[in-house]
Image (cartoon, rainbow, N blue to C red):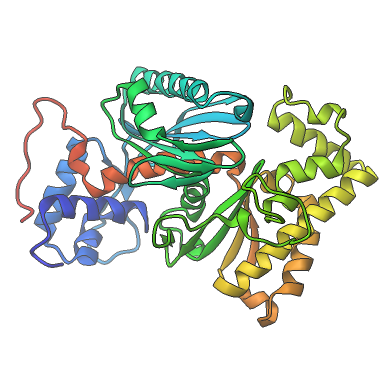
Length: 408
């Protein structure tokens, strides 16, 4: 490792090493990072003082005396994630090791509410979550907020949210004003944050993936070689507005035949149930509505099964177009697609295989998210925690802790 790296850089590299490959000894860290053992010991001592690293037993299988294995701790620091979607606002607090500390979701019909009211309710939920984090003895290091729509990250403005009915809403400034928070607030597209969560930092099987996130609309993200692709101005990942049915329905964005018009949740409900069917009641939570669809499909209800086959087929059509362009290692179905995955998957995989030119679908697998609707909000928390991996000194030492030296 170059001697030009600052101490802060080295602290961050140690933390990332313990996060991505996983727990390891000081000796192994020194070898992998090309640092002296004394330098690594000093860095680890500081990270332990900040509550970010702890001992995790004895390393086995090495030559010579067994070393103590180290792992991420970070129970005293949390990243908050939040999401604004058409059917809900949500929050989660994750500690540095990715463990859920607090989680909340509140159902609402955002498209029928003023943007200010939705932001009021989200700010109240964030404040409540932060209070619970502090009651648990931890500190909030940052907040990452996912919004359904096009986000200008340089200004933290939602430039267009077709399904929310929002345009040019300064989400970042509005939330900061409501929260008066001591921690930083970042705003991003929900699909990008879902992709961040699905990629699983350090998971070698999830470094080249296409995430398709189904809600009322359809979003997603592209992770290539472990990095989220944002595009020139940050608008990459608006998968739902790819035209797949030119003679079809008008989308909320104003165009005809967008992908989300044939496989968003609204399309599924239209195909599966009449307007007066109780499953379409907005007062019913999204989880309950999907549970009812799942129940009907499991019982073999003809209309429900046909609707799911239709939607699954359209998911496969769009996924095939993107797979021809990107050849991802896997297509991850997230959001409502994950919850109804067993019913959607056969038609989806059939259309995917038919539409991909490369033999054997180019090696692309279809996987179901285990996070579902929690993907975007957890991605927001992970984005907030990333600041700690970039600069571990943001987490204060306890008062009276000694300053360690030696890592130069």
